[in-house]
Every structure is written in C-alpha cells, then in structure tokens.
Length: 445
Image 1 (spheres, rainbow, N blue to C red):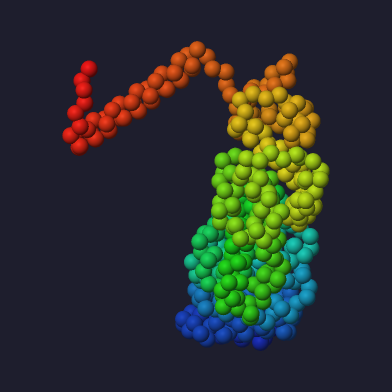
Image 2 (cartoon, rainbow, N blue to C red):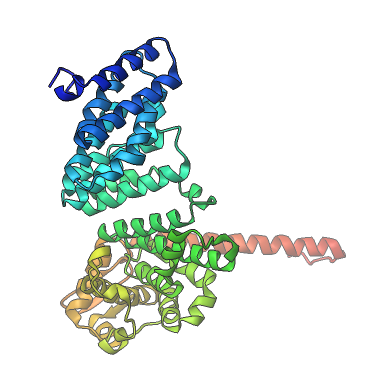
C-alpha cells in the first residue's frame, strides 16, 4: 500500500492512473462539475473493479486533495450513500465506509446532513451489535440544533433519536440536557405531529424513572389534550403519514387520561399537586363523569371527605400504573403503596383542617388503619411541612394547632380589638353620613 492508504493494485492500474490525471487537471483548472464527475467515477471504479472494502481509502484520498471542491465531496458522499453503502450487507465494511465519511465531513457546514446521517447509521449498527455504550458515545455529543442547514423536522427527530439511545443506556442526566434542546411550542407546528407524541412519551418515561410523577402526569395531560385535538380536527391527520397513524393507533384517550389522573395522585400532596387536582376538577368535568372511578378520586382529593383506607376501597382503583412495565420503568407495587399513602395523608389533612386536637385511636378507627401507621404518616407530613402537628404519646393525642403562649394570646386579643374598633368607627361614619343626607338631627348627650 502507498502513503495514501490506497491498495497498490489500484494505484498501479492504468485506468485509475488516467482518471487521476484527468481529475487533477480538472481540479487545478477549477472545472468543478467535471472534477466532481471524475471523483465519482474513481470511487465507482474502485468499487466495481476491486471491491467495496477499497472505497473508503479512495474516497478519503480524493477528499483530502488540495483545492478539492465542495461539490466533489458532496457528490462522492451522495454516490456512496445511494449506491455503494446499500449494496453491502457486511457490517464491518459498512462501519469502515461510515467512519471514512464521518472523518471527511466533520466540522464542514456544507455536509452537515451527511455527517449527521453517517453518525446515525453507525449508531444503529452499534446498537444492533449490542454495543450501547459505544452507540451512546457516538451520538450523544452531536449538537444537531446548531446545524443551520437542516430542516426543523429533521433536527427534532434527531434529538428524539439521541434521547432514545441515552434512555436505553440509562444516562438520564444527559437525557434531560438533550430534551431541553427541544422548544416545546415548536412541536405544535405542522409536520411535527408524530414527533410531539414521541417526545412526550419519552419525557413521561424519563419522569417516571426519576419519580417525578407530577411531571409525568403533566406529560400525559399534554398527550391526552393533543389526542383529543387531533381527533376533533381530523383534517390534521394525514393518512399518508404512517408514523403518525401508527402512533395514534398505539395509544387511546382513556389510557392517557387514566395515567394523567393516577400519576398526579401518586405525587406528594404539595401545593403544586393540589393546584393540578383543582384544575382537573374544573377543566375535565366531562371526562370525570365519563370515568366515574376517576371522578370519585378527584372528588375525594378536592373535597373534605374522609374515607376508610381498606383493601375493598382501594381495589376499585385498578390502574395500569399498578402493574410493572419495564419499558416505561413502572414499578406497580411501589406505585400502589404511594397511592395508598397519599389517600391516608389526604385524610389526615382533613383532620388538620377541622380539628385542633384528636386522639390517634379515633383517627385510626375512622380511616381504618393502625395507630402506628397514623403516627408514622403524621410524622412524614410534618417532616415535609405539609401540616403542623404535635403528638403526645402518653395521652395518645395529636394537636394540629400550636400551643398559644400568653404573648400570642395577647397579640390575638389586640388584633380582635383593633378589628372591632375599626368596624365601629366605620359604622359611626356611615350613620353620620346618612344623618347629613336626610337632615336627621341627633340628640347630643
């Protein structure tokens, strides 16, 4: 082999030498179209006469020639992708070709698409070989959003491909970083319908793994709303868009709405969760009537009722999220425990709202759980600053109001007196105003 890495048989081939001379002349004379055609002919010559394994070395040698035109490189790459690469079923040969294209195209604006395509094809081969680490390493650092010559649809699709690989690898920190490259409002544009569905399913998968159940619920809310929007505007669904049709056939309104409701109900009962539940009650009243079990759950969480947390009561809430699903990182048993836990804590928040002090035995009887569990859940709520509570184990009571000191009582009394005097003053003012209006004379004491 020579210094260019081309097999000696090719460099000594008379036909190849003649083509090389013609190519050199055209290149130096700046005959761009002729030079591009000759470059393609030389690549095809190496392929047809000596075999596909010699294409990368010829392609790289021609690409590195002095004053080589952009068109020549683009045409050679197009020929390789259109004709030569598909003809090979040998993965080692394919990898060699793709690596040569990546080496030539890296950092060149005019072949951004070809560079990204070569990276993706090489990543797919590595995945098929089970080499997830190398595949993720290959694709994760591609800043596709900075490639100005590419269409928005292609960029979003590429980012989703990166997210899938990173989730498959288990690199969830980088998954979040990559997901932030997608501008959410852009997903509402025409042509991005399927990509919007895929994106939010991936985000739901990420949030479920990270136990961000409120965010997962919001992801399913977006999907449910978008599903309803598409089916109420069927002209938006292009039957020729097989990917969109397939995505819609794999999901259902009931499943999406159910997951939306249940995920917000296994979220910690903080203010954000309460606001979301209130939103559901106000915005989705029709759906809650259609699915009475979900309606009962939202009524419970948004009302002041107390329920017994029995197996019989919980058995009516038989949702998909309580069944293991490895693909979406769903841990059914864990979710069921969280659901039960937050129903108990909802009950305790009602006690906190209406009682200043109550025995833990009485709470235990009303919500059908053990005294020890009552104590444990109250402690958890206090730790998370959901409620104020103080337990007296000797008396077996829990106080939901802080004990008032003399200073606090005095402050409270002063506030009450101030309000009373303010009201009295305002009343006197209104009486005086009426007297002046109607000329009523009052007897002065």
